[in-house]
Length: 193
Image 1: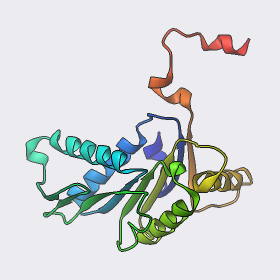
Image 2: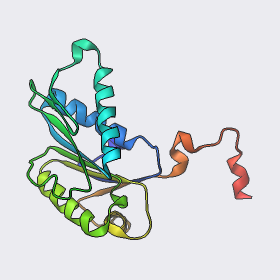
Image 3: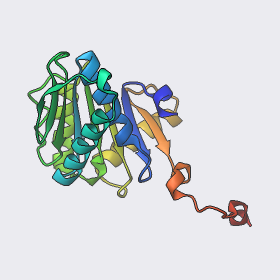
Image 4: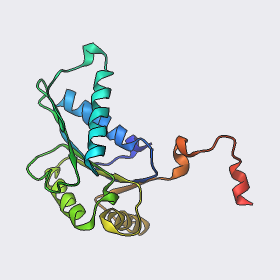
């Protein structure tokens, strides 16, 4: 559903465990390994960043051996591919200037709603400059009615309600669309009574 609807400036409001970070990680891996893309995925903290990098490595190891392009740099925050020149950097929101010195093809920021306002704004501006001609997406579970993610979400939502053009597209995936969030055998029709 999301792949067909993405625009290159996508804000994704979703419930937990919808697979959006995994999808973006797979797109980043394929883009870096086979198309020479320079990609950055930004996580809310070091633990999440380590998990995402390990997930990228697992995806890579599951490719058929004949389809793998051997990485030449594989460290704590980056996988680089010599043949294509592409890479994936996993950064954290704790370093708001992380994207500043790069020219990137893709930036995906997971869980920006979990980042404090001032740091979030600095990181957003830094990432926006780094990917000015590429793909930029924000994806998060809501964390209240405040902060950069909330403000961006509401700005896009109000523009869409008023039929006004906006640089960003809002994608909303509610909890009931996540398979892990549904109780088998529950009669949802009873809720309407």
